[in-house]
Length: 302
Image 1 (cartoon, rainbow, N blue to C red):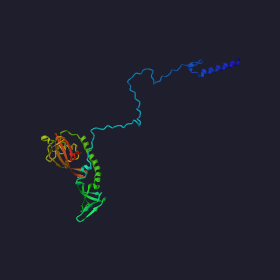
Image 2: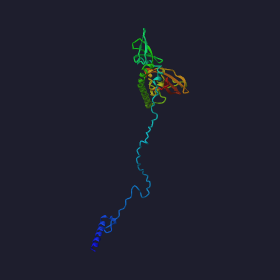
Image 3: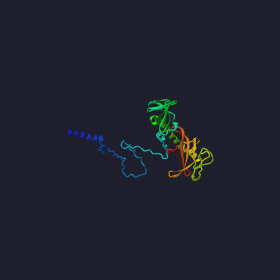
Image 4: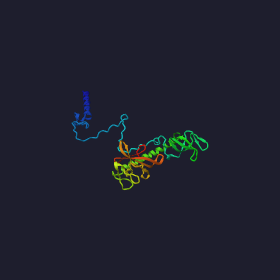
């Protein structure tokens, strides 16, 4: 009997201890109960329909492209930009070394082949690798001398010397300067304010830009044309300096582009690949308007 009482006492004490210490406050039997807490709703999952209130939420950043789907961006090419002039090669300018201006001489050249030079009495041979003095050229053949003061003369093909290599080296420098000259003229033409039909010439002769029968440009007493002077003054052509023009021709009526066009030949001194020299050019006028100004090759003047 005593043992039963002790057993019941132990069980009762254990229950009381569990009810007080281990049972959840809202599940207690003996001791005071507490209210069951409410469960907070998940804010990311609404328990009702959410209507659009017009507020645009920022979108999540786009994933960075991987090496598999990366594509280069294509830059937008600006319109009405400067276009470098089409400059012919040194071979085209010299007609494959058969027409070399006299301004290119004299100059020292290195021989690639043996060449015989003749004097008043006797002859000698200059060996390949030797330096000679080039005096002139005709139809692709150089006239050379052993030295600048030697009376001996010999002939050798231009291509059998280092003459082309020399010109090519200077050509690249000249080409860069030529393109920059054209670019500056383009900038001047874009930024200078002009009035259509107004005489923009640098020579104040008071005659204005006038045309005769069939739109023939009127020539000034000094040979120039106010229309072409205005073209130069406006920066459309920068290679021609009116003060260095050697000859202005009278207008000649020709058919160009299938249309009657007045052509004025203008010879002037210019800086070329071979140094200062006189250059022939041709200004074209049609319908009372300037059309183009080109060299013999058809290349536009910068």
